[in-house]
Image (cartoon, rainbow, N blue to C red; front, top):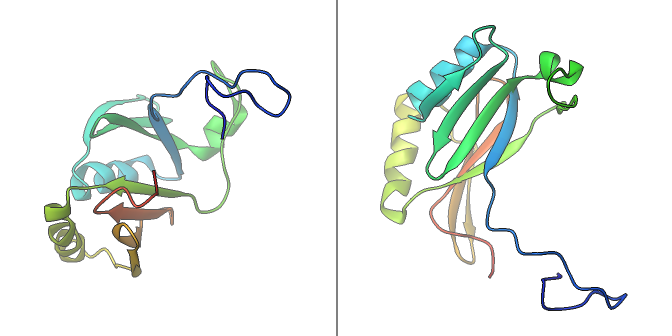
Length: 145
């Protein structure tokens, strides 16, 4: 890994530091169903949505979580075309004391917990959204520093 104070193998300085991930994007095929799941089941605050149903903008803690209609986004428009095909994956971080209540909440809403994993630095479990995207909830930063 490079940082701004360590030169890379060519002797050039590394890039300036990143301060975090501002937004994450997943793709949907049915906007109403997706809004119901992310706002209703996961409790994310809906910040905005395109009146034509192309995108949904949610707040997830300090980050923005975007949902785009895959078919429309791939065609492009005011931004370069982009998108993804197949199942995507995102992991949400919750306080340790909220981990078990999250599992209970999702089960009470008919969401199947697919697998739970004990990592060296915490726990996480996996489930899917209505479009098959794989979602994960972790009770700690499971990645080494």
